[in-house]
Length: 169
Image (cartoon, rainbow, N blue to C red; front, side, top):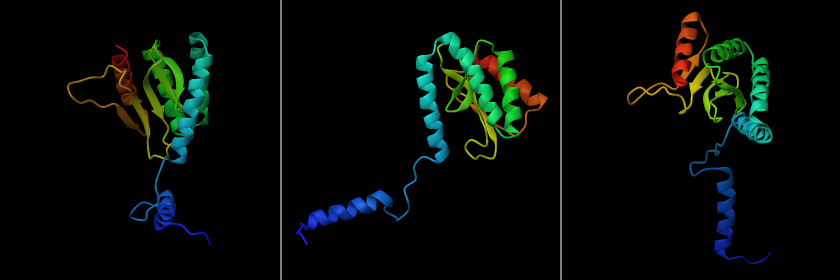
């Protein structure tokens, strides 16, 4: 058995421990499988955007969103389709695109203004409709930017329509 210094043995032990556990003997948590999948989808979206012209991107974005919506389980599929229709009618200047594998809508410079997240995507108990900082929703020092959705009734549709119009104003 080759001789090693006491320091070398300790370093080997430290490396083994630090790879699998924390100080209180719990496993280190990283990104979930769903989060990793969303990041991979975003990388693919960026590569596709780099290869595409702006006009083609809008057509491809519409197709991509409709494909993502079709993959969703109910009731998220119905809500996503309703939101898509509301956004197209309320803010036709927004371009549909996928963003981290989610339906999203961007302004002319390609920055996402609003997006829909299926409850199924991240194993959540509700879907969400959210706005990024490019949305003009500022009211005082605090305002909501994300909304939980369980169902879209006429009342929610009216609120969302008003928010979208304000976001792009």
